[in-house]
Length: 390
Image 1 (tube, helix red, strand yellow):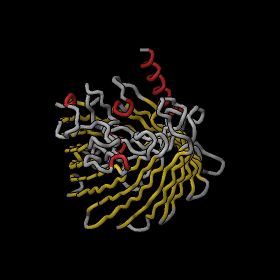
Image 2 (cartoon, helix red, strand yellow):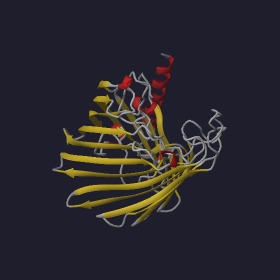
Image 3 (cartoon, helix red, strand yellow):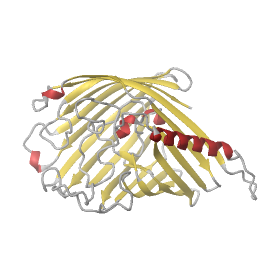
Image 4 (cartoon, one colour):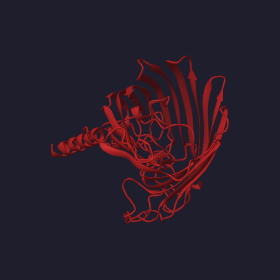
């Protein structure tokens, strides 16, 4: 109860401060600062998923249906413009699937300060969002309502983490460079090394855009004897949890993502808009040599995907995505069960002006002779989501 009271007090304090700050305060240079904007998002979702043993190496004890409503999600975002070149964002979000909580417990999910160095160059500090996706968004509930599907691909790699980020945005070109540590670490952690992430993109065409990037870490790997003072590798390699749940199995919402090698990751992606369709393509390669799942041998994976969104009118669209992740390690070169793939097909319907209903069918096939697979079983089913953002 004390924990809930503390959280409630913190949220009320943020609201009180926002209400107390004048929406416009006259400055000497006639600019009107600061300005504060609030936004709220709400979501309820549910699932009917089945784990099966069609995979000859699967675990029969996980078989069965896993159906029901997910816990409600809710968030409050505060955007503040302190001066012409200084702004900030604070997001307080209750995300049960992100943190594995059984209760309703809001957390500071994202916070950063932006310093506009020039018209096109910005320095961001706090917990910048980092990953190697240049164009396609990440499905993270109501906070990103416009992403067409409910779940992500099993190889989507993105998260927020403590650090600094330099962002460049120009007419036909953009880039960002990030140095960070994970949410669980911070720079004062005893773990070794930092994450270095860099990517660039061409945005000068409405029909065809492309980009690429890489991520690596500077520390030594975590030794197999369990000593946790090494580096866990690239901070976002294993994803940021998903919208699929398997209660009672010991499987959490992280484990539907592949166990991606976390040493160095390269990725290229593009967006193609043609005949009213929005298409996304991406391909990448990840590798790891220190203390890999194969006991010191190199661990590497090739991943690729294709997604499309088909708008029928302003209120209704259909979408689909296919993702493949193949284990390229020598340790599994003679096996036929070394890949993880996922097919997703869904639609979205704008029920009211700010209310979006989405539904999705998903099928994931997991190879068992690979360190990529975290469940080992094949699974499939449907999910549905109603979200409101205002």
